[in-house]
Amino acid sequence: MLQWVLESMPRERADWKYQVVLKMTSLSFASLHTTTMMFHNLLARLASRPDLRARLRAEQARVLAEFGTTATPTAVLDAMDLLDACIQECARLHFGVSTFQRVVATTDDEITLNHGRTTIPAGATVLLSPVSINMDPLVYGPDVDQFRPDRFLELTQAHLKKSTTVRSDFLMWGSGRHACPGRFLAISEIKRMACILLRSYDFETVSGKPFEFSSLFLGNIVRDQPVRFTRIVDLAVA
Ligand code: HEM
Image 1 (cartoon, rainbow, N blue to C red):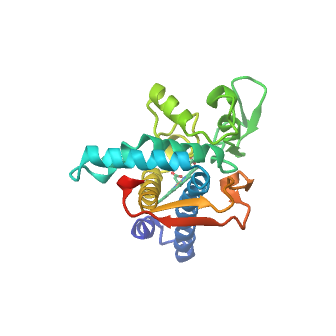
Image 2: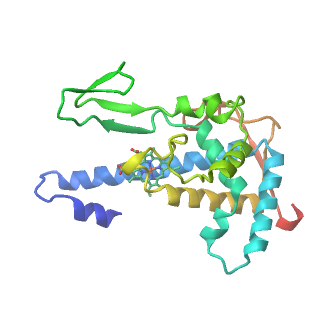
């Protein structure tokens, strides 16, 4: 990544070194913060759901037995539909403020949207919030405020959509030609970490209650909610 940024930076810019640092810092934030928060949200949600943890372990055991040792890690992870659904449900509930930002580039002074009621001046910055879709009962059902990953299994059966699929009813990755190129890496990392953790430990909130989130934005949790980890010796036993 550093090499690519170095090569693409015009050297005639007096501040090119500063620009390289700026780009690398922004990229680190865009890739690490997002992935970390997504994984953290997943753990926080699962910590009060022994039923889901048991189903995820069973899924992992079934897929590993089915694929054996010769399949690629990607194929194995792709077959874990419930894990994928849990990640999608986390993404749905813990959205960012905006999913993408665009500058209106047009030769006219403004553009008018199809319904005719809104005009946007040329040069304006437009942001799209995922809230209206993510929390729309017409899209996700009447229980939109509940953590229910199975809704994505039901939707997946109908539409064959995975967590890495860019689509208008799932805006986690933005949209169009600028949709997040790091999504395959991010989902692969999250799934691998989740699999290792689930097969090695059980974990639950000490209070036995669900995690509290101070806001849903990228999963801000209320602090001081201890989690107890217990080592699991044999996945088959879990
Ligand atoms: C869960 C983790 C992640 C989330 C939720 C996320 C989300 C996003 C979103 C919403 C955008 C804006 C897309 C748009 O404008 O339409 C974006 C862009 C971008 N992301 Fe990610 N991202 C994640 C992980 C990563 C990782 C791991 C990398 C790199 C290794 C990465 C690199 C980028 C880059 C380079 C762009 C700019 C793409 C462009 O403008 O053409 N992201 N990401």
